[in-house]
Length: 104
Image (tube, rainbow, N blue to C red; front, side, top):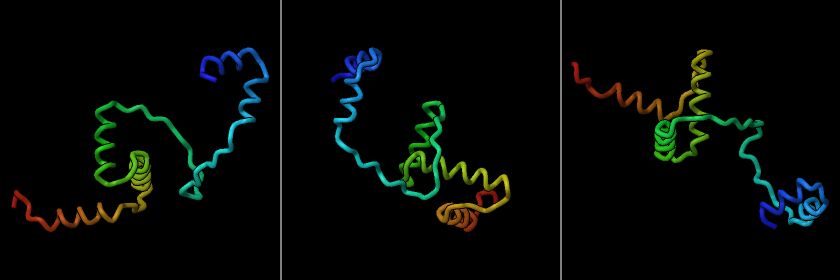
């Protein structure tokens, strides 16, 4: 059954669509990677901004949503003065401090 036929079945109120659903094979859902309940939200970004975020995520070998979640958590931590930073960020900051500045 294609989408058009399924839509017609749905709008006609027929039982055929329910039968098709009942006949479908069972699907295993992926196991969540965390015990923390998650909420999905849609965020509209300019294409250029999204491409920059994706490039940073790719460079860190993580997903875009993981990176965005990390940035949001870090921003919220900054609001309440708790320190949540990645080890990589700490190393970059220390390496920058160890470099002689151009102004000196």
